[in-house]
Image 1 (tube, rainbow, N blue to C red):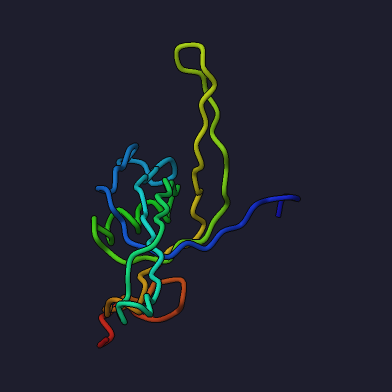
Image 2 (cartoon, rainbow, N blue to C red):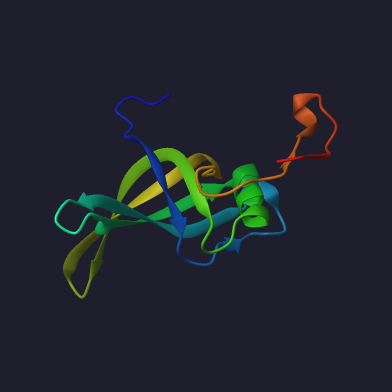
Length: 133
């Protein structure tokens, strides 16, 4: 583990298509997408839930995780992603620019908003077969 990493767990919905490159080589595969998370607040005056602030986070994942994400998730899916947070810096027309990006190290569905059918991985010692949700 590197010192001074900024770790983050993000819950939200995938709000873009999952883009993949180097798809023919799992060792170099990259998947990228954006997750949006919305605050919800209870408004006592209207006695209802209202939307609050939003966060749009660009997420990238690599290798085996990228392959799994590309084969599992689509735009609109509720997810939980954990990983490292980075600032990307560049110049455009002589002006410094920056944005935040997450490098996901693990990812899964947010079971608060969906049900899944789980397929066991060979590494778990269990056969790969559907398990009822």
